[in-house]
Image (cartoon, rainbow, N blue to C red; front, side, top):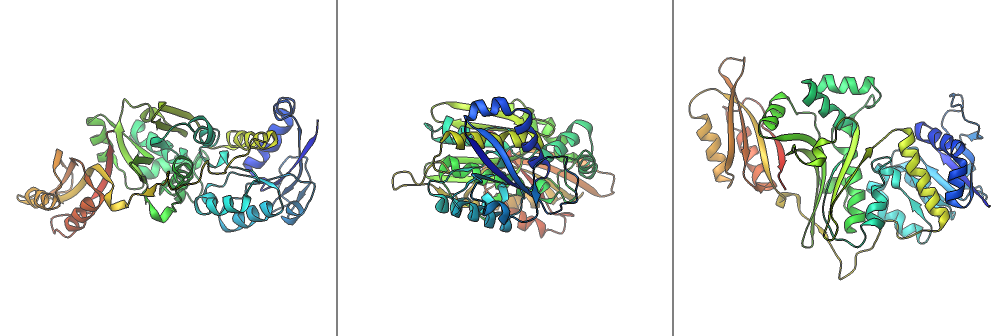
Length: 423
């Protein structure tokens, strides 16, 4: 049985797990791959850090990229610019590439596909850790048009929302708890502002639709402004609040968005709690399929990395992103302002007569009708909370209405919206 030599650039939590799993499960992995997997070298930034691994380490990336005996390069450093340069160099040196880097792929996945030609690139670990959603879209569902995809793609934000909903905690308390448990970084920005989920959605959209969109092209919003009023409203009307990545096919247009959403409590995806991830995919032939599991962590992510290595060794290479658009199969990104949804709106207002009429007038002028309305008293004197839900309308209409509402003297805080996913 032949040896396959591997170089790992970035030996942190995931890199150490890759090495550990390759050692502890080497017999079954070798049997499935048809080869012995040998981690020849690792590259780190700090050699003095204790890692409890037995492979040779270096601080020089070229020690791996220039080594003719290394067959597969695993990139696990994160970030965009340096990781992209590493990926390009590996491919130009005719080395297969495996990466868990969703941020780099969100910006450069099509660039890498052009460079790679027939050199395989594995990136299962870039989306939802141990859940094999990349393979599902590339292979298992390849006979289907993907009609819709809805995913809880970020475990940190899902944990925070779960704590807020189940334990009546506020956002800051839940975030602090997530950090103490190691689910959130010291700087949790990408998790809580939707950026991490946005990167993952763009990768999935490439596989499902062959569409090359960048983060700036799509709606990306986070969970920072959700409060107890929103959770109470959702609960009263049978909804759970989740940070969702959403893709929908409508003829030749694809809408892509990441934001908090109110979804029916009876939907399977609404029951995904804590740090777990879940993705619902609807195909035109298979119907709905649901993928659930650990979306992060050393071992689940390393499991996905090793699955890519095995697939590369078996010679199961195909187009990195599943397919290329043709004159017959060509999708375009739906403009953000044309996306349609129902909306929940939270308003803090002066508690006096005529305010509701002003709000209703602005909504009507923007062709927005109200389906549900609640008014709540608050401790602050002469202040009220208005919570309402709309019928279906467009992003453009809701944006214009919100901008006009902000200018009313009777509106005490900027209005806050959450989209309602009823489909």
